[in-house]
Amino acid sequence: MAKIQMKTPIVEMDGDEMTRILWKDIKDILILPYVDLKSEYYDLGLKHRDETGDTVTVESALATKKYGVAVKCATITPNVQRMSEYQLHEMWKSPNGTIRRILDGTVFRAPIVVEGIRSYVPTWTKPIVLARHAYGDVYSAVDEKVEAGSKAFLVVEDKDGKEISRRLVHDFNGTTGVVQGMHNCDASIRSFAHTCFRYALEQKIPMIFATKDTISKVYDGRFKQIFAEVYAEYEAQFEQAGIWYLYTLIDDAVARVVRSEGGLLWACKNYDGDVMSDMVATAYGSLGMMTSVLVSPDGKYEYEAAHGTVTRHYYKYLKGEETSTNSVATIFAWTGALRKRGELDEIPALVSFADRLEKATVTTIEEGEMTGDLVPLFHREGVTPKKLNSRDFLLAIASRL
Image 1 (cartoon, rainbow, N blue to C red):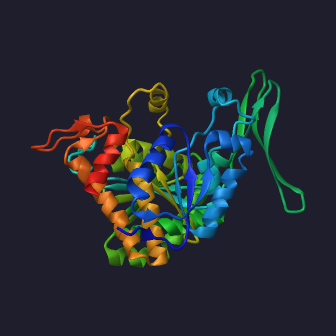
Image 2 (tube, rainbow, N blue to C red):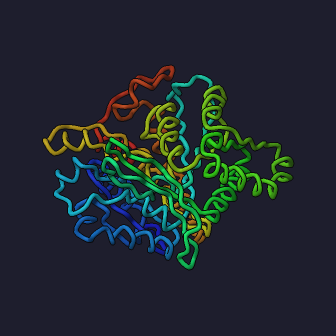
Image 3 (cartoon, rainbow, N blue to C red):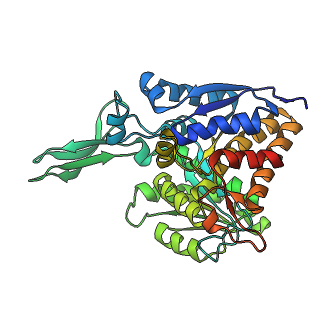
């Protein structure tokens, strides 16, 4: 068959460890035989980020702003152990955080629902979509170690450098410690609110937004206030669509969501969304079964898997041992990017290909062929699950594609 032709490139961000191995196999087995892939390639592997002083991450984000669609492999955010392991020049910040800061977007994460994979929460019969604010908070924070006897202050100056306020954060009298300062911007919070309300209307699902404004009265209180202001613009449309919006505290939201049947959008601040998206993904079966897309206010899209680089499997791979690594979320990152590129460039064949690849992936699992993490979760009458290694799972999908 003739390969499907593309008009505009997508931005391709390669990554680390086991997901980097899967990345190449997915392209070679499932995409390149059918699509004349046009991509602008950026290597976001940790070694290359270190070699470029992390400028490659910024370049990939700017390319996404230029071309409008990106697909990203999972990457390492280094800690002290990684600093030594990779002999890094610096403990580089999260590449996801850098990209989100530049695009100022909202991350939407939704489970990939497969017949036979049961949720750990029996009441969850419908997908829960988690919207994560992708700007600021702890991901853009500055922090310092503090010596005993020091004092830390929060100081605000006006545009001319005149001090407006000075508040004592803590007097480290007699003890060492740490201090951290973080921020957010009204414009980013407002665009986050608009994006969430629009998504809920498009999907016709109710929406919950939660913070902890009883404790963080000014910081979280600002989120609550802006969301209330923005919702006033959408309230009539929500009522017409027969859906609702609820603001509540994050601990109350957790209780409500666990008791629910699903079928809703849960909007969270940056850190809350990071934690809760992993909880929701795992409850639906596996982190390997969760899609993730970053949507900027001006309509740029970056697709990725919600999970990490699968380090333990990578070390097995390096020893020549067989792995059975779930590649579903990474496949869906590619299909999401290719579908969006096809929609924006009006290439129906590319949209159809993305749909078919997703269907082939889901069908492979539903017919009993899957990676090891899904076998204990799979229960379908008349179907006995069979564990496949990482590459054979992709070949099983290819046979159906």
